[in-house]
Picture: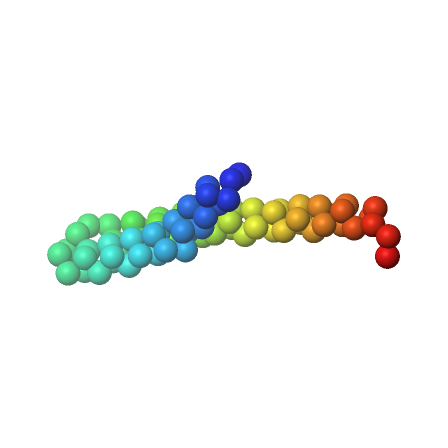
Length: 78
């Protein structure tokens, strides 16, 4: 995954979905829109899933970086 795609996914998970859930919850209460609890719960579940993916990708990336740094230092003289 490219850095740009990772950053976009992270932005959606950290900013867009929580804001969307809060917006729908507030407007549903004000305007009497239906299924507020179900819709906001669905947004929260999707956001939690994306957050887990972001964490997994970050750990995988950090592991690759650590492995790569270790490979470079092995051939160097102390």
